Image (cartoon, rainbow, N blue to C red; front, side, top):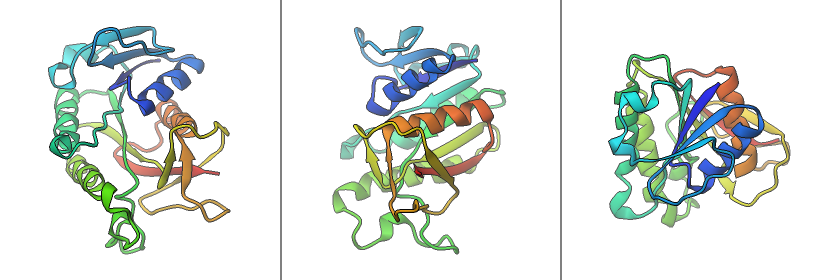
Length: 211
């Protein structure tokens, strides 16, 4: 299976490339700057997301969107980059899997309250959570793309251990048996690659948490 990881030089992107390569997938990493090395990638392509065209991605079975930005002035790019990827993959069988956020997970059965609405949700993360939630809301309108949006747990640990165990939830925040919402980037990458291989959640958002 051939996959592309867009924004592969980021922390999540790198973990996903390594995990995918270790499982026998042929990975092409798309990065913005020359000289960026991505371990595990068979090929590294230097190209901005907005410059990607359908021809750049037509050979792949799946595309992982690992784009992320935290600066206030660039937060709208979460929606813009995702729209661009959807547009160039529209009408194809190429799957699009998105590294999402936890802030948009629901905290009640009625789906009227989200994690980011909680009074103890850190103010510093609210603009990012809102931008990712907006991108997801727009993505839900796309029935022309085989997308899957994967939200990590609230405590998304870049340097956390790779346990190899995780739980899959749906639209609502899922806690593990210890009452925690936590997952490492490494375990998140396992969940991402499992979804690439199994394709169980087309046009759905799922959440993952450490088991």
